[in-house]
Amino acid sequence: MAGTLKITLVKSMIGRPEKHRRVLRGMGLKKPNRSVELQDTPSIRGMINTVSHLVKFEEKNR
Image 1 (cartoon, rainbow, N blue to C red):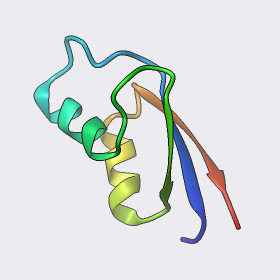
Image 2: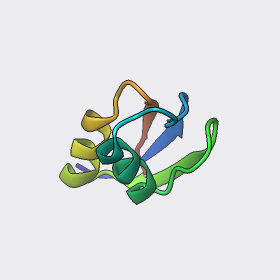
Image 3: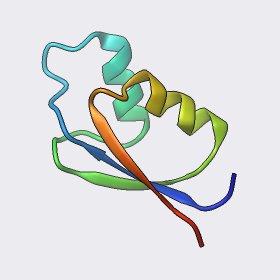
């Protein structure tokens, strides 16, 4: 896996389990409609899979 992922928080984390909140904070997402660009690694993919109902992501290959 090469390149980066642009991850955007599309739903609020209010009322979500603490595990989901920790995953979102670990990715650097704190407020809705904010985006971060992270390296495309298996651990980041796992984090996205955990909170896939709260985020949207797109691949950016360099």
